[in-house]
Amino acid sequence: MANYTAADVKKLRELTGAGMMDCKKALEEAAGDVDKAVEVLRVKGQKGVAKREGRSAENGAVVSVIAADNASGLILELKCETDFVAKGEKFQSVASALAAHVAKTNPADIEALLASEIEAGKTVQAYVDEANANLGEKIVLDRFAQFSGGYVSAYMHRTMPDLPPQIGVLVELDKENAEIAKGIAQHIAAFAPRYLSKEDVPAEVVEAERRVAEETTRAEGKPEAALPKIVEGRINGFFKDATLLGQPYALDNKKSVEKVLQEAGVTLKRFSRIKVGI
Image (tube, rainbow, N blue to C red; front, side, top):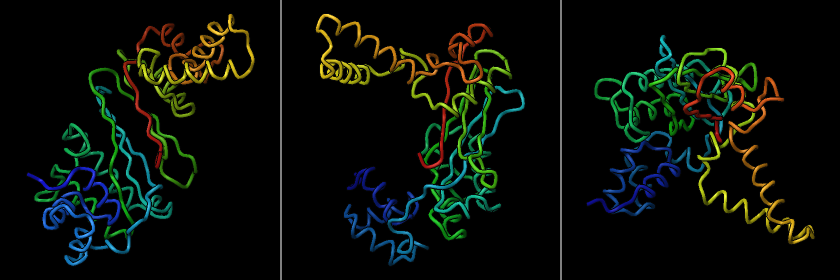
């Protein structure tokens, strides 16, 4: 039985920048002691371990792969430390290779992706570690989204013209409509909805919003009899802001996103928005 936890592996990776498998081996050798595991990695000469301790990777790129028939697609975030590296051909080549690998292998989650072989005898984690050493920066792969089964499309947004896309949005409709898919994805990129619909908002989130609304309303000195109506209005305002279907559509703010979809005769099954570093 392992004498360490997933949290220990995560902490060691953050401290050293070393790969997941190397961290696991070091923790095994160190009997679960994270500090000793750091020393183990140093002794074994992991490239960049001491140099990259404490560094954060908040730059990078989002890349996408969409099937020719739009039946499947993905977006993937690869992070680095500086925009200088992010805009480089080598970094973007690594990101594209990783996205192509995801499209080919359909991993269940990030751990399955990192453990999969991208080249003969080389895992994705080892491939990322190699990029880490070659580019001289901490390179992190910890997020991707992949859809299939409907009409899948992506929108990639550049926040600066000389940088690769920093925001990626993946959407899945129940039927083909390229124009609506693009418009909805652009809206999501701009307005960053947290949920698809009211039904997707966790009950605990709604209750927290309700408590805040009640306390705020009382603090404003509103009549007790009017409180339920005012609170309900504020909750509805929260749904309008936080849910995609409730938001006014970016390309026609007289209509909600839900109304636009209804008029087009399509259903948005799901979406994912990734912004580098957030």
